[in-house]
Length: 609
Ligand code: F6R
Image (cartoon, rainbow, N blue to C red; front, side):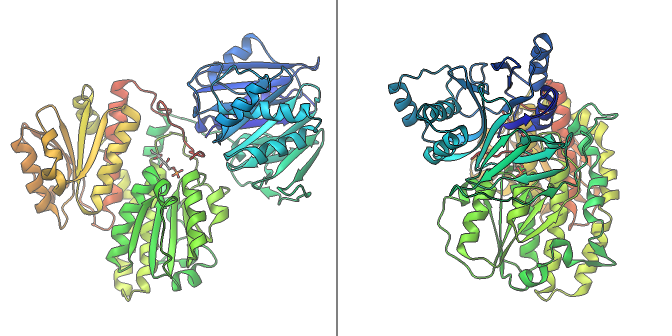
């Protein structure tokens, strides 16, 4: 993860760098730092542990001046969260470097560098990189050539930016993994990990390809590819809004984004339905050809997006499409016998998740019918790398815990199941029934948000708990998994999800009167089975919190609390039942006093393996 920003300007660069860091903070917020080449030709550095706000404060005390600089917001990989480990790292007082990613062979390089007389002031892999560039400069290479020689020696996945005190107006940037963008405006040059940081100065950007080294000298920028040849990269124009998202009446972005879900799903569906029919072109211009060749679906994703995939598996299998769902970080390192006619579907709100990108690359190598990404960021790497893209259009999601993008991704996946159902012989009546239910989603989501006060009340029970169990069956098991993940990540309570029928095979041993057990219990085909599982919990003194509709037939008692959800069709129930679980985790986090939008140790975009 980590965010990189850099500038070669004709006027003061520090304002742009700081605003860029604020806009990249979602990528990591353990520490931040900036280096400027001062008007006197020296490297001036300020670093601070904590969020970008801490760096801002430090800079207020001691402002930095200069037109050339690099800055970084960190998500720690190698080395603890300390100021010495914060970037930029400096070698010999003259060379400064910021890096996003991981360098795997840093140990062996460090040994050689020690032998060459260099010393270390941090535990990071990045310090090894800046030392390596320095050694190449010592051997007479020019800055860009020294960077090229260095990246050829590094194993791993990273992008970086470097400046040298002796060369104000020059910045060298390189990509070998996580994205790095170049922007140009009014004779000034900028680099950043994503477009958000560039938007205050320009909408036009180029994306470096792996192996590229960009050499910025004043107003000029020359890109050379891995082979050292001059490369011309397409200039894209961003359509993203330059405004940073505002909280408005809400206390946290997560709360705002939970409440935005009716609008978000309406935006996801906009232009995708015609009467009672899903428009196939919503998935891209080659949708018909690729869907015609599809015999099975392989879904690959991480975290919350993986849970969306698990829900979709139920929908796809219901319409007769064989479907497997894999965690991307595992998929990429397994052997997969090639299977003709596989549609690989990746799901990613950011479109930049390193494991998902690598898994897509691996899957594509196998020979597949095509790839489709369900994504919220149109300018992301996964969108660029996929044959088809379904954009969820729910606007920027700022809270680290995904909420609206999950619900919108599931809505998109339900449309995919319908489009594929046509090829499986399901009649138009089936599609039109489900589309009618889909059209009710925004209203049903609005209605379920009305449960917030009751949920806030129940959240009080969880405030002093250390563990919680989440149960569900069928397509609601992944919703229970998502509920448990949300509780873990923002309230730091250990939570596990189980398919309710599995309890008796082990986890029931955990149940006693101290263990809150949350169950997703809509009135569906499995309700009677779920009831029996829940009775087993009650019999062991477990305290139940049931999200259920009136038809589920539960009776409230001292040990059973019912949170009533308005009845919805089973086709859309997993989407609706997500929302009360999000609200539960949000209100528990409020009680625990955690940093809801920036939970500890996490980041919004996971661009490292
Ligand atoms: C949890 C969460 C993460 C992400 C995961 C994948 O709330 O947001 O689990 O779902 O890191 O990220 P994307 O969807 O960007 O690929």
